[in-house]
Structure formats: C-alpha cells, structure tokens
Amino acid sequence: MHPSQGIDVSDVAVFLGIDVGKAKHYAVALDRSGTALLQAELPQDEARIRALIEGLMTIGTVLTVVDQPASIGALPVAVARAVGTQVAYLPGLAMRRLADLHPGEAKTDARDSFVIASAARSTPHALRSLELDDEQRAELAMLAGFDDDLQTSIVSATNRLRDLLTQIHPALERAVGPDLERPGALDLLMKYPGPEALCLAGRTRIRKVVATRSPRIADRLTDAVCDALTRQTVVVTGTTAAAQVVPRLAAQLSMLREQRRQIAEQVERLVEAHPLSPVLTSMPGVAVRTATRILTEVVGKDFPTPGHLASYAGLAPVSRRSGSSIRGEHAPRGGNRRLKRALFLSAFASLSDPASRAYYDRKRAERKTHNQALLALARRRCDVLYAMLRDHTPYDHEHGHAA
Image 1 (cartoon, rainbow, N blue to C red):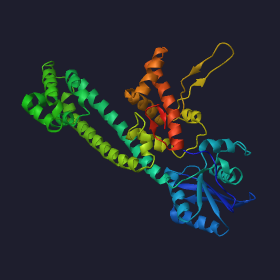
Image 2: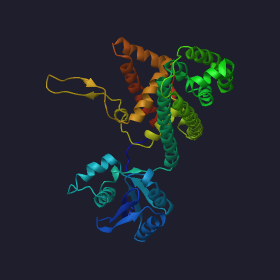
Image 3: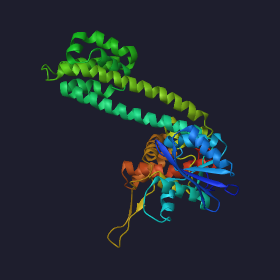
Image 4: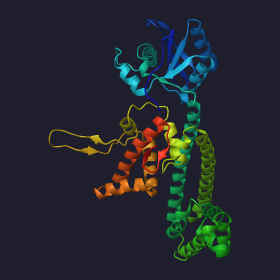
C-alpha cells in the first residue's frame, strides 16, 4: 500500500488505451497533442498485440494502459511488458468518472478505449502502476479464487448430502451430519451408503472404517450411528435410490476437501514467501487465509487514509440524516465483501488477545450486540492494519497497534 503518485508520462510519446475483452480488445493510440494515431479492434492474440505495440514503438516511448490488468487483460499486460513498454491500469471508478467528461452517453468499446488513452495523456495521476510483485499477487488471487469456488462447492455438496440423509433417515443425518468434514465419516457413507447397509455391516465394521482415517471420533460416531439405526424401522420411499446417490456425493465431497487442502498448501507457501507475510501474521487473528485476502485485496491499491481503507472494506459506518426525522450512523452495505468477511472473522479470532478482548468487552458494555462489537473491533483493527502496511512494521502486542 502506498500513496497515490500516478505515473510519470514526461517522456511518453504514445498513449495506448486498451479496452480489454474476452475474445477481442479495442485499442486507441493518442500522441501527446491528443491526435489519434490508431483505432482498431485487437484480437486476443499475442502476435497481433505484439505487432501493434512494436509498430507504435517506432514513433517513440509507449505507455500501455488497460482497464483490467488481470483475467481477460492478462495477455495484453504480459505482451506490453515483454516488448519493454511501461504498463498501467485505469481503475473502474476513475474510468466512469472520466467518461462523464466526454461528450455522448454511448457505452462502446471504442469510446471506452479512447477514455483510457485520454486519461493516460491528460490525467496520469488517475493511473495505477502495475508493480513487479503484481505477478505474485495475481498468482495468489487466482489460487484464492479457486479456493473460494471449492468452498462454495463443498457447502453445496454438504447441504445436498445432509438433505438426502434427512429425507430417508433423519436420525442417521443427526448422527453423521455434524462430522461430514471428517474423512472417516465420508468413508463410512461411501462404503455403507444407507441404513440397510449400515445395519448389515454392524458395529465392528462401522468403527473400523471410521477409525482408519478419523480415529479420534471412531467410538463416538459409531455409537451415534448404531443408536440412530434403532430409532427408525420403516423404509422411506426413495431409500434405494438414495443408496446410489449418497456414496457419490460423499466421494465428491471427499475429493473437494482434498483439493482444498492441496490449494491451501500452495497458498501458504506463496504467503510465507511474500515480504509482508511477517508483518501481517504478527497481528492476532491473522493467519494464512486472512493474510492472503489482505495481500490480494489491499496491497498494491491506494488508500490515502485509514478511513478510505475502512470504507473500501465496508467497515466504515454510514451517516444517514434527513431533517430531524432520520439521524444516526448505520452499518454499510457495500464495500469489498470478501475483505469485509475476512477482517470480521479475523476480529473474532483475535478475541484471545488481551487488547482485542478488552476493546470488545468495552463495546458490549455499551450495549452493542455481539456482531456490532465485532464490527467495531474489525474497524479499529483496520486502522492498525493500515499503519502496519504503510510503515511495514509488525503488530505491537504490548500496546495493541503497529510497532
């Protein structure tokens, strides 16, 4: 995180604005006087992008600006870097505001790329530099995004499996459902996927399957399953079909959890290799997943004050006033939801820290609810995080702020 300084364009001869797209981009090149040198569609193809940029480089120094540096904009950025041009990006909010200064209300690729090129030429302070460590953050962001997808799939598969068990045998669902994050419980459902199969297996076999990979819960889960089987004697319609679906859902859930474990190992290695890792993890409640979210959502962006960061994270209270009838501050509904969730959960995890617990208890004494007190704590920790990132200093456990 750094102060907003814009881009130095003093020696730039050509301002190339690229409105990126999935299959093709649109490029507009302007000289220092604002004269259009080029306006053309540009396919998502390395050779064509390279040829266009190298052709402009014969005129002079080129600044390549995109509106999205990751995902569909990754190839133009990589090619522009490879041929030796300076690369920057124009944030979406700045682009929308600058677009209002141009005549017309049309929303076209040609107009957007012209706005990008014009911004690079006339308002370079609105641009953001793409630093070298963006590659590391991009890798982290990709893995973190895949981890989010895996978690969504895990929740969906878990809910589907529990719903199916509830339909055919509610008591069995109550016994197995809370332990579906344990591999032993999933192995049990893959091997004995229904009440009938479990009854035929018997206590000894049930315990053996569970104990193979989850020995700590083997006795408890075996007792719970055997007790559940005695509580229902009727066979519900659909039980036979469920016996075909349950093992497949259990296998899918087991595979998803293993994939997430592997991704977590890769993410942990990347986070530990990042120079800011010791700074971030020095803060109570910040482990690998929270550090990953901070590195991908905060680091590299410009926040002039701690309040700007809090607003971006959706932690800054919103004032609502209208005459004398509506007054007060309310929790914000916007902001970066992924970052807000990470900072909220991090605040909850930090309650074992004396400074965090004291602040939380003070807010509860002010008659705030548990969630309100946690949000207030997350907001306070956001200010501390801002100082830690700004100064690259670890957390001061003695005083509860950046060292």
